[in-house]
Length: 459
Image 1 (tube, rainbow, N blue to C red):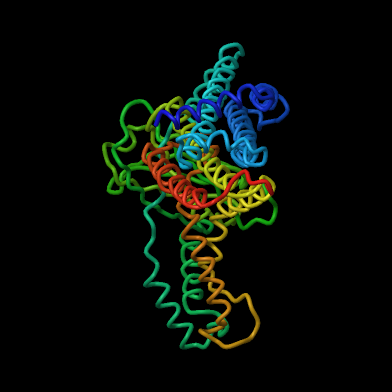
Image 2: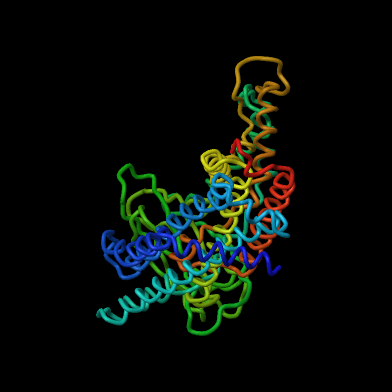
């Protein structure tokens, strides 16, 4: 362990003495201080703070990711190329210790830079709030919408499988089903249409959604209803008048609020905790009372959300920085592994491809679930599909199974929107990205590194 820490310390000191860290400090300083001055918000204090958080922390992650990727690839590859690795492997040092030392040095450097960046972002935010004059309403909106950690709750999901089966059977008897699509894909399309209909409010009608709260809201913190919708009107930004009714499912009298909102953007309704009356199953009802006959269409997946207070912004910021550190640590593990086994240019290309594949994990998963056809006519293995489609989907499924566990919450979106980043998400990221995947990188790299002749004359 002492040898690993010594290698990590040497790697860290050499990085600090290099010009790379100085350039990183300058770039991070420009991202934290200068970048917020070049972007514009929607004119509100909450919007400006969201822009600051999103752009500054996003820029910090991009800078550190590029630096980690390149430094990780070069950590061992440059020493092998310069034949400096002989000075290490001739000593009683295991090759797994070399990998761990280089990786831990990168992790420690990233942890220090992330801590400084987080402190700088938080300090700039507090300095702005302390030196400029804002109204009480602006500060309250900021405190309730951004500088908070709220748990996000979706409506109780609708069970539409049986209804979709009935519609499917009816259409099949009528001969109205497409003949070139698999049965499962047709059923999914029918289910999607039923769900969209359940989130559509025709003129003069109302819709009700139910929410299960983890605990009854208490105290002075309101519960926030966040929603976004479209309409049947052709023009964008159409104003729509509606009435919200929120309260316990069995209650006759509920909290009411009439609003007129444009169809673009996200809107919020603050509901006092007293409106829930100690209940945990809540009904949220929307009545379309617009004077003109316009249908209102809520997004089925994220059109309606309840946000309940769950913690402070400071705690959320710490958890987001930890998630960022674990992400950079995994990136460093891939880069160090590639640089240990390959030359620097090849290692950069291979690790870059792997990281790009991980980034596109959700897209790969959607392709793996897609039942469509990719190839022309051939030996049919099922309706509308060829054997090559089966093979391609199998490969996509394997790729998805490997990279999907690495997908996690979008920390920039969660932090800027005041959404709670759970400690369970932090623990899960540590287990998957550090223990499992980085550990797998270490094991595979050590296995091949022990069988590689390094610093040969031909190298």
